[in-house]
Length: 314
Image (cartoon, rainbow, N blue to C red; front, side, top):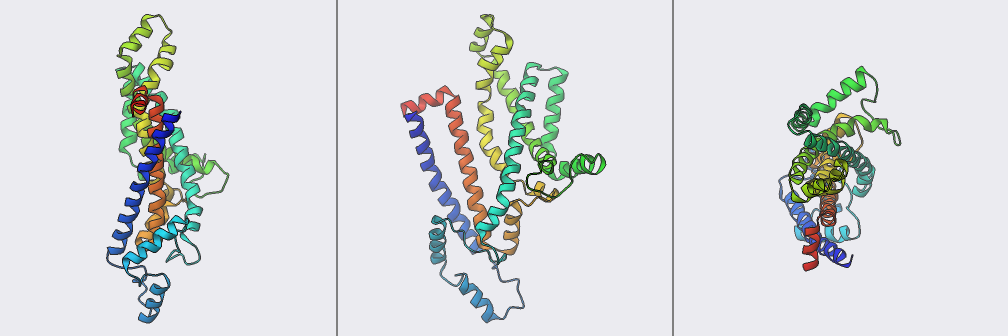
């Protein structure tokens, strides 16, 4: 346990500089790009525009702006939004992020519950019609983007069959999440099914599985106890970036189904040159991505004895 804690602390120590680099690069790239948050307000007299820039600190040297931003960030303050003047960036993120998190984590959970059994079934029925059928559907799930499957599901299951709402959101009403979660989960289900199938086929050919079968153990026990755990290591490795991708990449699905998630703020902030809003979203998404990858690494260490041995040696 101490070695695992030490390994986790080392990994966390590596995450902090990475996040700092992301914040720094993003800050200067956004500021250096031509244009500003008040450039599109053509009716503003120059003196009013100058006053606005002074109020938000945009008249200060770039390095001083950067120092002020970092000082606020350490205190958990993302700053005011330049365009949503009645809200701080923290308030805007707090409004949309819970919906995006619920949507993304539900999609990942559904992908695991469906993808792993499908991949296992395909591996156990290798080169059978079942295997070909599952893999064909998986390829289709990867190939079709959310802006195609989302409207299709809305048309069939929302407008035609009237099983689920087509758009909108009501807190606590899970039926509003069904279609967007399935839409978001489809490509992840496909990847997990393919990873599980390929990895399980390799594990089934290893000596320790052959030995377990030679001992006369039931096939179900061989699969569940001896084969599936090492076969899931590639899935665990994929889980971190997949979860981050689903949470941060749900903008299209949120737009199609009219969900008040946080993805829209990143796009609106970029269009409006709302520096603080864009930076707030980058910090939140960057932190989520790094944290989820860290969790995946730690899970990999728990499941893989070779990783544990490397931790012991370190």
